[in-house]
Image (cartoon, rainbow, N blue to C red; front, side, top):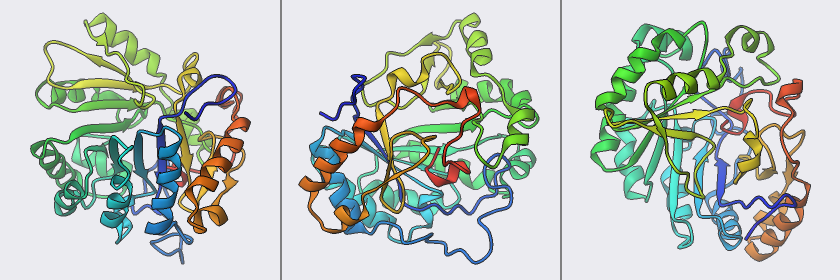
Length: 325
């Protein structure tokens, strides 16, 4: 089992397959990806390299892999990538995070490839506000894809970044939606990155405020599984869906960390807000998963006790598209 010097065990790998995104979310990439950049990004890991990486992590006890971006669906070889992860018998759960842009046309192929959990970014249920936040008029298409995921029996979650000036007023609408919709709606505290200092200052909302409201209304916390993500989930007998809260500025947030991140180019990031990623590409490209596993064991010794977001430190993270948030 992969364990750091603080006794935290790591069952969960978040693997970016591209650092490119086709959305222009105001809290992440308001200016888009920039001119001249390939939609594949800069030399992302190939399917065989991903297979080697996953074998190494699986041998160290990883049970859940999430493909992130950028936007993973921009990879034309996404289905083979999913198949490469699913080929490892030790991986119990295969997930993806997507903006849903291509979801209706691709979700069936992803499901056939072995995908069993999907997280869809929906920061507003109002079409005009959705377009204002993301730069795209795709809410209807995204919701259509979500319905198909539910029909296929996939565990379906929705990510909504809390934004004081844009969607905080929609809280009641979100709650009304999950009264009948069996998804986990995860409210995510806006995190400060290298590129969003002013936006963060005017839009950050403490997740603890939402938690106080939920507890007052009779919501109860769900017991976490060992490969669960960072959200604290809540359920209510009157609702088909659940609420999740991701509160990186909350007390002891890092104490329960169970996940590691690998960039699209094969760097190991011990924290989303670490000041660097560790090069693994050469070892990955060699195809020796045992040597790679040994390398990862050494690198994990450098994982810090926690991030320094409270002190304004954002590390190397310029925007959340770099490592999938």
